[in-house]
Amino acid sequence: MSAEPVSLVPATRLMEGAGVVVNRTIGTPALRSLDPFLMLDHFNSTSPGDYIAGFPDHPHRGFSTLTYLVEGHMLHRDSLGHEGDLATGGAQWMKAARGVIHSEMPKQTEGRMSGFQLWVNLPSREKLSDPAYREILPDQMGRLPLTGGEVRLLAGSWGTVSGPDLDLLTGLVCADIRLSPGASLELPPDLLSGRSAFAFLISGEASISGRSFPEETLAVLSSGNPQGPSIEMGAGPGGARIFFASAVPVREPVAAYGPFVMNTRDEIEQAIDDYRSGRLTR
Image 1 (cartoon, rainbow, N blue to C red):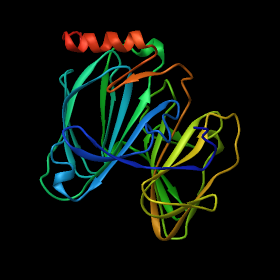
Image 2: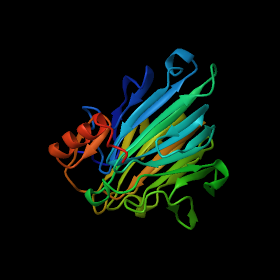
Image 3: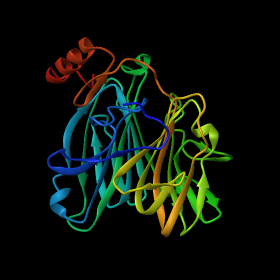
Image 4: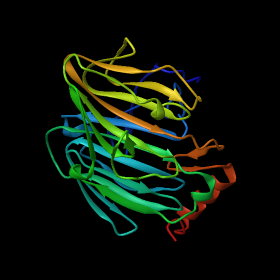
């Protein structure tokens, strides 16, 4: 897909994990990837049947994941010995690299479970490096006040405000943008030029450069072009909450199979063999 600024990609409803309902935008036939972003899943339901089965133990190799919990409570455990208590407004960053086996299971039996999981590619030199994990609490995020809103930085910098440096390889910037009714925000050019960037409407009503922005739709704002038009996001009468991410493309071949993302088919087959033989995390 040729991803020009403000092209819209509707979500595809899928079942993941042990039976969790997700709405996927990046990683579908409509948008296979948005280098370096490999996948974006949005989960959002008040029905326990849509999330209660969670994501039992499963492997990853060759990329990093960012999980952001808009509302709810989940527990992360992994083969590195980490245990993360992910609650409303919190995030976690996991560099799977050469191999991690982990689980993400609900710690609630009712109420809303809402959030995102974003997969970010690793360059070939890092795919078999040491894995790592980091938990990001809400008070560790950068906060940029706006005239009519706020930007909460899960990762990277926005102007003079910085959040956690999660991925220096791609310069990842990730934010939860909250706009009051009728407010608008022009995105900084340095988060668009030469980078891939997208926005996803979490709730409310919004427009992007005058174009209506429906819920469960991803807006491709930039796809690595050196320079593009300025982009303004605006909120409707009910305000808007938007999930935003921007990063520098890796620009390498991608070979993917399920939870493994490498550069060649041979590397994928090696990852599968390593997992089956118990060598993935060694």
